[in-house]
Length: 143
Length: 308
Image 1 (cartoon, each protein chain N blue to C red):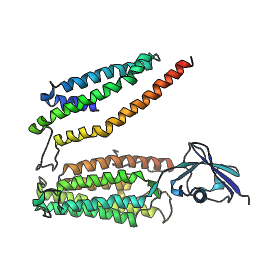
Image 2 (spheres, chains in turn blue, green; image 1 turned 90 degrees about the vertical axis):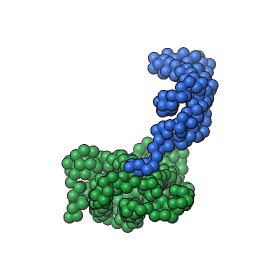
Image 3 (cartoon, chains in turn red, green; image 1 turned 90 degrees about the horizontal axis):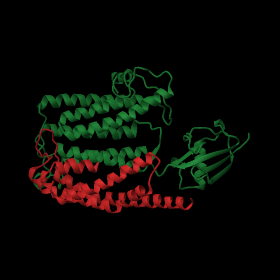
Image 4 (tube, helix red, strand yellow; image 1 turned 180 degrees about the vertical axis):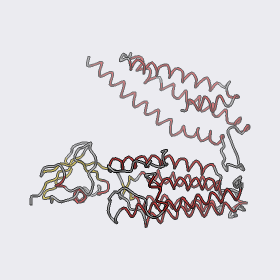
C-alpha cells in the first residue's frame, strides 16, 4: 500500500523530486528486500528453503527497513513545497460539492503516521526473527 | 427430584473454576451465571459465555439445565467476553454526540471558522432546514432507543463504544463543518432540489419509524422472541413484501435525501459507508431468517428489492 503511494502519489506525481537521492535510497531498499522476500516465498512453496534465504529475510530488514523509511520520508518532505505551490490534488471552498481537501496537509499527516506505525512493524519483525531463527537452531541441534 | 451438579471449566486452560452442587434441574443458564458470579465477582453474567463444548456456541440464558444434553453432573466451559456495556448506553452516547456536535457548527461556535464568523448565522435557508432535519433525525433515534426498541442482547463489548462514537461523531463533525461553512454553496437546482430532497427525507423517516414500531410489536415486552415480520395496515410497512430489513432501506433513503438537500460530498460519502454497513447487517439478518423459518417468503431480498 505504501509502495503504491510513494511510487504514484508522490514520486510520479511530483516530477521535481524524481532526481532526489532519497528516491534512490528507497528504491534500493525495496529492491533488495523484495528479491529476498519473494525468493523466500518461492522456496518455501517448493519445500526447499535454504537457510541463507531465511536468515537474509529475517536479518537484512534490520538495515533495509530504516533505510527504506528514511528514503520515503525524505522524498515526501522534498515534495511538500511543490505540492503547496501547484495545489496538487487539492480542492478548496467554495465549490458546488461543498468539499475540500488539502493534499499538503494530508502528506504531513502521512509523515506523522510513520511515528506510531514504523516502531510497531519493526519490533514485530524483530520478534519474528527471534522466534524463527532460534527455532531453526534448535532443529539443527537435534539433528 | 434429583439435583444436578455443575462444574465450570475455563474453555482455554480447562482449569476448574467453579463447582456448584444442588442445582435445580429446571435452573436456567441465567441462574447458573448468577451463581458463578458469586465465586468470581469480576465476571458479571453479561460477560460470561457458557458452552457445552469449549469451541462450541454459547448457551442461551433461557436454556434450561435438564433440557441440555448433559448428565446429572454437567460440565460447562467458560469464556470471558470482556468488559461489557449496555446497548442502550452505547446508542444514547453515539446518537447524542452528532446531535450536539452539529449544533456547535450550526451556531458557529468560536475556533471553527475564524473570528469574524463567530456566532453568525448562514444566509441560506437550506442550511437552517438541514439543521432541523439532522437534529430531528438524531432526536428520533434517541427517543426510539428509550421508548421503542426491544433489544435481544443486553450488552456488547466495551471497545465498541469507542469505535462507534468515533464513526458517528467524526462523520457528524465532517458533514456539519461544510454545511455550516460561511463559503457553503447551496444546491445547484435551488428550491426545487431542496423540496424534492425534503419529501424523500420525511417519507423515509416516517417509513423507518413505521418499521421500528412494527418490529417492536412483534415482540412482547421483556422477551427475546423472533418472528417473521409481515406488512401491517400501515402502507410504509408494505416494503416487508419485498425486503427483509426495510428499516435499513428507509435509513439509506433518508440519508440520500439529506445528501441531495445539502449537495455536500461528505454527506454522500457518509450515506455510502452507512449503506455498505447496513447491507452487511441486512444480509446477515436475512440469512438468519432463512435458517430459522422454513416458510420464509422467497420474494424478499435483504435490503434493496430484487437487487441486494
